[in-house]
Amino acid sequence: MSLLSVNDLTRNFGGLTAVSRANLHVDEGELVGLIGPNGAGKTTLFNVLTGVYPPSSGTIELNVDGTTTSIGGKRPNAICRAGVGRTFQNIRLFKDLTVLDNVRIAMQQNIPYSLLAAFTHAGTFGGKEQQIRDESEQLLAVMGLADKADELSRNLSYGDQRHLEIARALAVRPKLLLLDEPAAGMNPNETRDLTDLISQLRRDFGLTVVLIEHDMSLVMRICERIYVLDHGSIISEGTPEHVRNDPLVIEAYLGEEAPNA
Amino acid sequence: MTEFLQQAINALSLGSIYALIALGYTMVYGIIKLINFAHGEIYMIGAFVGYWTMSVFHLGVFEAILAAMIVCTVLGVLIERVAYRPLRRSTRLASLITAIGMSLLLQYTMMYFVGADPRAYPALPDYMNASFSLGGVVVKSQQLVIIGISVLLMILLQFVVKTTKMGKAMRAVSQDPEAAQLMGISVDRTISFTFAIGSALAGAAGVLVGIYYNSINPLMGIMPGLKAFVAAVFGGIGIIPGALIGAFVIGGAETAVSALGYSLFRDGVVFAILIAILIVKPTGLLGKNVREKV
Image (cartoon, rainbow over all chains, first blue to last red; front, side, top):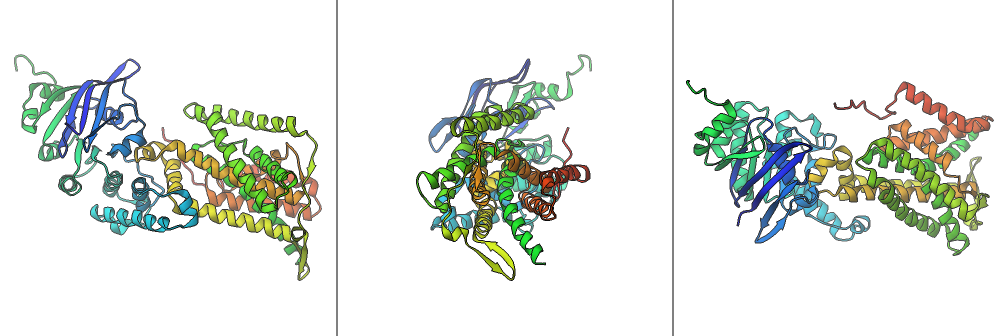
């Protein structure tokens, strides 16, 4: 059974159908790309998957460790705890908090303690806070941000902010990581480094990744399977090789071939 | 000099009471951008709960403060639940008007049940009425209790906001509720928690004012509520240290005006400060200019 199964998912905004009867599945451990022209509905699909918008119709199921939960229409925080982490197309860090706090806030959801313990300092509180801190610092080290832990996240460079977003998404310990244009605004060198980093993270954390990306060099290099979205519908699915040669995809990106060309 | 120190003590007592109320205003504003005009009424109800704890149940001052804090916590969470939560996605003006309505509802519901006449606070135990002289400055022990309890509560608040999970969640929600929710934080719970803490502080302030002025009535929340609001605006609304600074400035100004013999202008000067700060630095002392994103 797939980790993520999306069946006949539709999302309307008034008269506009942003996602239309989308079917997709992602197996555990896969790295899947989601591409499509601007306005195809890719980010809307992510938003429905993470609960920002409820689906208009259709189901979303998440199968973690043999138990299946229907996450369609649940609240974002519940879906997050069910095991879905994400980053944003336009960076949405907590800008006035430090780099470390950004990660701690996401991390602390996994390490519970009661408010009473915080007040009385009984046993668990100090240890739990220390654990949250240690694990957050480890995560920052992995993302190459260890030396910037105490800076305000608004003061980070653009590339570092992108890395911090990924660190924060990893801190919720997701099974499924959704990356919304992780390489947007990066130069070719940075994109290459990011490509390697994503592969490495996926190995080290045992992640399943779905990423939206416009940078085809990144998509073609690391994605095992690709879904192509156009006008809200999935028009093609398969290996990078297959998708690259699919006439429907070429048409969606470049327009129809002139009959006598 | 003695006179100055004497007035400084008075200013500190008054300022710390305003600070307790102002913190609630500023935290709620920081997290949902709502000026909770019913906050002054929570403080009023805190004063009455303290009154009943002492006069009906014959318990001490500290039990009264604790009881007021507990009742006000429940009340604050309840008000948010029934009055503000259903409006969270509507315009800010709708919630603001609801807040004013809630404030009037609480004032006149209380008046219906307890009457409009001011009541004297129950007699305090001897150790609260003692006063002693420090080099000519007369300090009443109740002033020390007021300052001590306020400072203790502020330290506790600082601890909660800076180091606990809930505090971190509060700061995250105040910056970007949607992103916070996508990181697994329950926005509803965080907002309830904010109302709970703010209301608990207001409840404590109510009892302290009862002790200090020795008189309570159902409309007592209006003026201190407004002044605490001015304090929060003065320091930069939404900023916790700003509310503290504002509260002590307002307390100081009020005390100074009374000490100079113009006690009739005591309230006026507070609002003059509000007008001045809105002209000179509308974002408040510690506030930053935030441009609205289009």
